[in-house]
Image 1 (cartoon, rainbow, N blue to C red):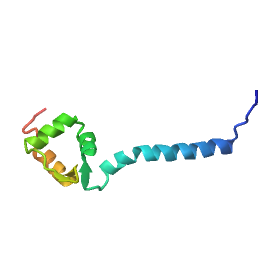
Image 2 (image 1 turned 180 degrees about the vertical axis):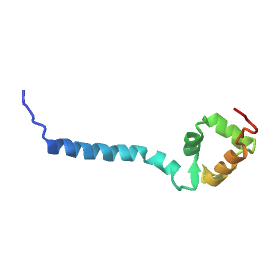
Image 3 (image 1 turned 120 degrees about the vertical axis):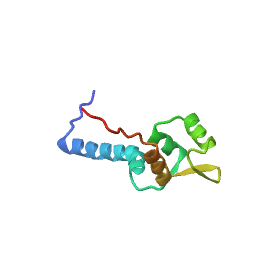
Length: 96
């Protein structure tokens, strides 16, 4: 049975590689928060935390605009934000 010694440099290298891999995994989430204007279906579902069926219903009912190009649906982030703002429920005249 061979014994391997792990050095501090080995751990530092492992940490660097690990954080690099994690950054790749979380990049799509950062894109959603970032400045990407046109979102694909999976991004909108993740952003709004809705199912494919719910998103399809929103499209069919004309509640959420989209553009179809080459079989891929794109949604304008600005339009989604506008719709969310319009539907925001505000509490008025609440006294504590």
